[in-house]
Image 1 (cartoon, one colour):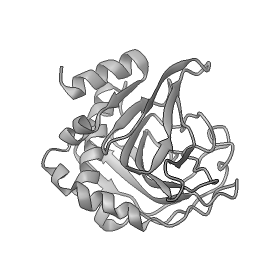
Image 2 (image 1 turned 120 degrees about the vertical axis):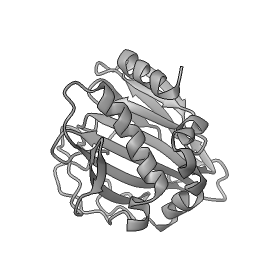
Image 3 (image 1 turned 60 degrees about the vertical axis):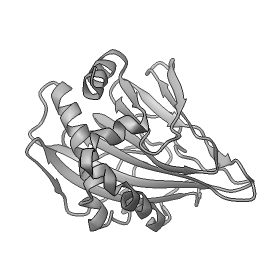
Length: 242
């Protein structure tokens, strides 16, 4: 069974599917050769200044796209917004994050991931839209001795979209950072740790909640760094990841 076939079956049966890094990166084809420059861009993320808990452990850039089977086009820069129903910590305000650079928005790895998600989600959605509203987030979570980093400070949550991709880009000196998947009634559906570049989980946001446990340094003498790409697909209005 091919990776896309397995993904369609798992999403239909369980509401999520996990990909090993080598599977995800195989979906990129020739674009995977450009992975190093894609991953290096996480070293240029500004601090997220919208953390209601006062935390300085998250860095971030943001972009929005219109994605259809025929084209993927970047939208004008805009705020990221979520209701407090989905994000009780940081929701309810327009958050103007620094934009993803043009180089990364047009990067072959970025475009490959956007197309891979589009092809999968469009094919299994009932009455898919002519174009999806897609939001892309570059996240870096940092931790130091005595100072944990919170990948999902709002806890287990839905993002208020239709589909979600969470892909690990890099992980250095990190202890924990376990991804937990739950049914709406709180039943655990699975726990796993994204450890290798390209490890990913694709989620049906209508059917499951997701969260990640805090990270801390394996070696307290140095910082812990967890870099992820989050991509969300929604039918219309902007919304997205935590």
